[in-house]
Amino acid sequence: MRHFISISACAYEELRYLLDVSRRLKKQHKDTGRNEPLLVGKTLALIFEKPSLRTRVSFTVAMNHLGGSAMMLRDEEVGLDKREPAKDVARVLSGMCDGIMARTFAHAKVIELAKYATVPVINGLTDFSHPCQAMADLMTIEEHFGTLKGRTLAFIGDANNVARSLATACGRFGLRFILATPSAYRLPADDVDRIMAQVPELDFVMTQDPLEAVREADAVYTDTWVSMGQEAEKAQRLMDFQGFAVDERLMAAAPRHAIVLHCLPAYRGYEISDGVIESPNSMVFAQAENRLHFQKGLLAVLMAGSRVI
Ligand code: CP
Ligand code: NVA
Image 1: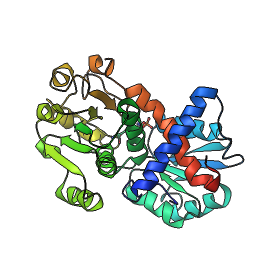
Image 2: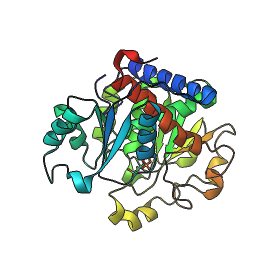
Image 3: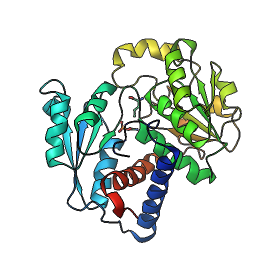
Image 4: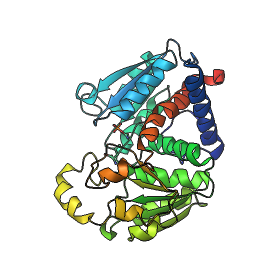
């Protein structure tokens, strides 16, 4: 594994190893307060074309814990494909840094960075996918239930970047993935075909009925109806997604043991109610914390080579 751009590019064994290393580093940190100095002297460049709380903080703290450092580069300054070509940025950063994490609008920019970089490139969210989020989410589900295989994840709302990465992650780890969207926002057929070609083993159900979707769910997941970059569509989307909120009415149709997940930031009163996000079944803050622990495992595997515990 040289880069981490998509879950589908990784074999099950590689993804399993990432979760195992992340879990070990988390346990060591929780039990002893100490961290493995696996990345002493190494620097990770963070490029953001979009805002962030969790991704920025988790990568920065992860590098600190592992003995290295992270450098925040706002795209207003870097100007990927504006001030200079992404392929030049990739080679300049490769000469000075040990890894690049990029959050971009166009997925093609992260691919271009990876094509030209000689250091690992990590996808920190694009319009197309959010693989680090999906892996932290599986880590959270596994911690809670003890297993992944055979579990059911119901994603309610927009068939967006997070949903796409979760679909592939569920396929790799043997979870059933149920996607409930309004019909005008369902996953396009070419996306479905691509996902099924990448993870033919995925048990993938698509529906327009959120109540039906959660009936057998172990985890009920939602995300904003208006992703970064879709602000101009906000008024229309808020109307179109009526009936798709993860609220008390929807959770009453889910099994009592079902946990609630949200990648955050959450818009209470829209895709999720305040009562549900604050309920005992909500795991959203454990899920957010796992962004740090998964990032540590990922950075250790990608950047520390054979010294990973
Ligand atoms: N979930 C997530 O990626 O959060 P940020 O946009 O705050 O990084
Ligand atoms: N789908 C959301 C995820 C934010 C972490 C977005 O792209 O804005």
